[in-house]
Amino acid sequence: MADKSAIGAEGVPFEVAIERGKIREFARATRSTHAEYLDAEHPVAPPTFLTTMFFWEEGVAGANPWHHVKLDQKRGMHAEQEYVYFGPPPRAGAKLTARSRIESVYDKEGRRGGKMTFAVMVTEFRDESGRLVAEARLTGVETERPPDADAPKEVR
Amino acid sequence: MTMNWDDIREGAEPAPLVVGPVTRTDFVRYQGASGDMNPIHHDETFARAAGYEAPLAVGMFQAGVLATWATSWLGPANVRRTKVRWREQVWPGDVLTCVGKVARRYEENGERKVDLELVCTRQTGGVAVQGWMTFVVP
Image (cartoon, rainbow over the protein chains, first blue to last red):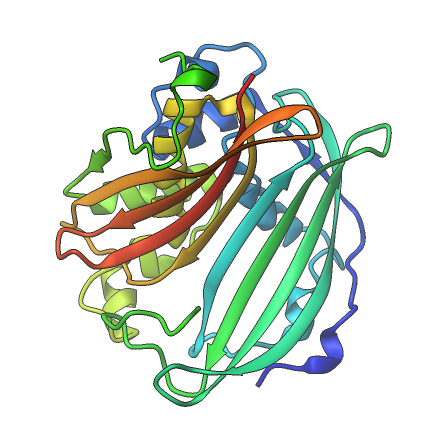
């Protein structure tokens, strides 16, 4: 069961290095053949590339406040993901500092009945001067019933 | 492809990116690239024990392919916003069609921008991912 007291929980800052090889690998895995990813010396990060940082965040003690939400893994899923860039996406070579916080935890009625609980985590990415470069917004949802793999998700 | 502000029209819908049939290898390649090694996306035994018939795609894989359709058209450095919402799961053997259209063309703070509405559809016609993106047009 999601824990609403998680709202406001904040992780410790963690370092994010934007790397060329990782960008090229990610671009290929998402079927891009764009020269700006594959050939540039300092390619920009693809639109959803910052998702890769989530798994480094896991390795830094205290960095990921998502655990405070306590969504049930068996009834939970990734509902929405958003990335906003305040200028061009970061380029290979950029050294960013990221910090995550739990923005909201709220309930909603599903279209086919049943309560759904949503939780939103915001992660800010800043450059070495402290400028906000990007913001990620992860929305997770927990349903009262286990999700049916073939049914459309009851998310609006 | 170079795109020109004067050639962009609201409602414009360039040719889709069709990917697939997608394979377990596609999922694993994406998992390696992203760092998300959840076994439900590649381990048959684990996926069946969880009640699925096969490993399911990583949602961020099809979200990434959908974004690739858009950056191929409007340019990687011009992205300012990407939002995705997952609907149906994607399975090995699915053929994904990624496409979008210009929902709004406008100027804001001295920049020319377009908002796109995107959709990644399975071969069944079911929607796997909905997307919204904003690009600047230099």
